Length: 254
Image (cartoon, rainbow, N blue to C red; front, side):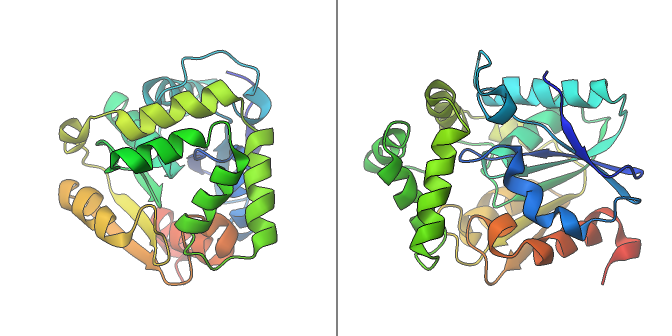
């Protein structure tokens, strides 16, 4: 595991797992909302992304979960909150199943579920094309944010996704987050879970979150952000931070 960035030095420990289109910088916009004296947030890059762009695979959910636990071991964290965006939510569930005694809380931000993604064949082929077509990436970003964000942001986000990931990792992680199936096993998760959905998200809509995360996990709580799509860390970062802080450290709730 390459060196992992951290933010803060407080007793509330979080490992943040980025999604398919991003590296660990995905969470940078919301960090200003976290008191560094209360929180310590580890921000690893997954294999094939960011500082680990040149790393070797395998590029799959299980390996990402193992790497997250390696981060915790590097810092000698015996307990922590695991937080994931999009595919990172699926990784977070896998981490909880692998080391449940160490995971205090789980946060899924517009998260992919533990089962197979409900893609029809045409959608599956379209998403696969994103590995080699930046225009497809931009179209996916536009669709999943409700077709309402500025074109300049969509273009830059698509281009950045190419710059921060290698093509093999991008392609292989898609097959894993879209195709891996451990939904039945995930029902054993007992930790408190916060699921953040974006009301404008057309990729992981609220009704899908309710029928998977909320229906399957006994201690799951849902927050729906009215102005967010699939990327609340970009669309409304400080409001997102407020929801996360209230869940992790209720004494700071507003």
